[in-house]
Length: 354
Image (cartoon, rainbow, N blue to C red):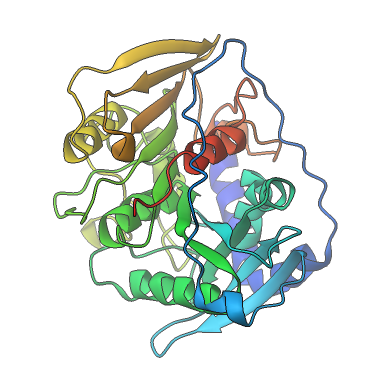
């Protein structure tokens, strides 16, 4: 019975995504009140923010940004797309930017609502860019080296830096699920532009990853994630994900997966791989942060910190989010930590080295 309900839910989701242009208009004009809850039961020592001089972008000489949320279009020769833009007050001076990448199946507007980073950034002084590519089929990303999607995101960064006053030392990327895969990939491929990354429910290590510099990483993952398994590969509920055209399973189309998914390594092994890549020591420390969250932290150079928050019994969700995720499909969401605050604390402490 549970399986039938899951399949029905994904069919309904698929039908909704086919009409996502209409959904964009609805979500874009609706007033969404989002409170991301959660607080530490035990203190975690955080690095102090780096307050050294910014690197102003080209837009600092021409931009007159209006604070608040807006929907923007952006296209290149090979891709057309749009993004939700959240601008804080006072963005007429060099301002940090966080790119928030959606997961498979979900449009940018749902990512913005579920992560809460857009509204959080408006309150805490950073611009949030939540992009999506307008193409047939369900929302997704191609994060492989040299892909048109990665080129689109790089060009989008250039566009944002030329139209807003951006601190180019403080450009960051985060995202959920496939957005976490893509965040991991951008840390590899755009390491000269991305200061730090925060993959949620999908930190990945790629054999082809050769960044030009150590890239600080803070990751979050539920140990009971039923879609991207904590111990590697896909979880049992991944078979319910439809293929990009909405038919069949994403795992079985054409005798294989219809889109790129998680690699076989466990999430802790992926964190360890990033630690090796960043020149960290091999023996991490472990700290119980709350009753259901453990923090693994590697001994790293200041410019290459690697941290993993493991949510004990947690699912395929954003820690601290109040967005009503379908628990039978995604698993439980913890509210004992606030991922937005932890991500921002980590980002503030890790600008691009000069």
